Image (cartoon, rainbow, N blue to C red; front, side, top):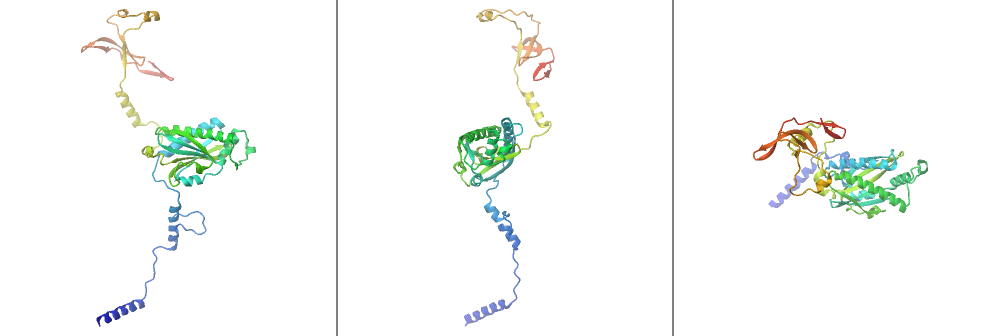
Length: 350
C-alpha cells in the first residue's frame, strides 16, 4: 500500500514540473565566440585564430633564444661583404625572416628544382642545411655566367641543374657556411663542414619531420632582382650551447661604457708586468761572442755611482740607483716614470 502511494506522489511531482513554465535557455557562448574558438570564419580562406589554428600551426617558439637573431644578423652582414666582392658593389644581403617551424613543414616549402647542401656542426654534434631554390639559382648563375638583365628577364629554371651549375651553387653554399661558422664561433666554438649535396629536399634528412628547427630566410638583392636562400638549423643541434643562446642581448652601446672602463682600469692596475734593470750595454763582434768561455770577463765602463736604466717591454721607463736591501739587489728610483706618448700605431716615450 505504501509503495502505491509513493509511486502516485512521484508521478504527480513529474506532472507538476512538466506543467511549470520553463526558463529560457541561455547559451554560455554565442555563435560568434564558438566560430572564433574553433577557427571557423565564413568567406575567408586564411586560417583564423582559435582551436583550429592551434592544431594546424607548424610550430611556435618553444623557448626564447635571444642570441639566435643576433648571430644570424652577423652572418648576413659578413655574407653581404663576401657577395659584394663576388658580384660587385650592388649586391646586398638581408635577413628576411627567422622563425621556428617543424622540419617537415620547412622541407615542403622548398621549391623544386633545388640545391640542398647539408652540413655537420662539429663540436655541437648536430646537422643543418642550406637550401637554394630555382629563383636564387637563376639569379646567381645569370650574374656569374654573364647573362644580362635583359636576357635573364627574371626567368626561373624548370629543369634540373647541370654539373657546372651545381658546382657554382656548391661553392656559394660553402661561402654561406664559412660566414655562418665565423659568426657562430663568436659565441661557441663550432665548425660547419659540408656533408653532401642533394637535389631533392626530402633526401636531405637531418631531422625528423616533427622536430622543431630554426629557419632563416636570407634575401640576396642583385641588379634590382631579389631571391631567397634558406638556412635551417634544428634546435636539437643547439642543445649543447642552449644556455649561451638564451642569454639576453642588450645591443651595441654607443659611446663610452663607464662600467667597463672602470673594470678595465681596475684590472690594469692589478696586472703584473715584468721590468728589467739594465746595467750596461756594449757592442761586440759575433766572433768575440762565440769565443766566450767559462772564466772570461767583460769589462763594464761604469762607476758605482752610475744610474741603471729600468725597462719594460723594451721601452725605457725611468732610471735608478743600484744597491742592496734585505739581502737582495735592489734599484732605488731616482727619476719620475716617463709617460707614454702615442703617434700613429706605435708608441714612444715623451
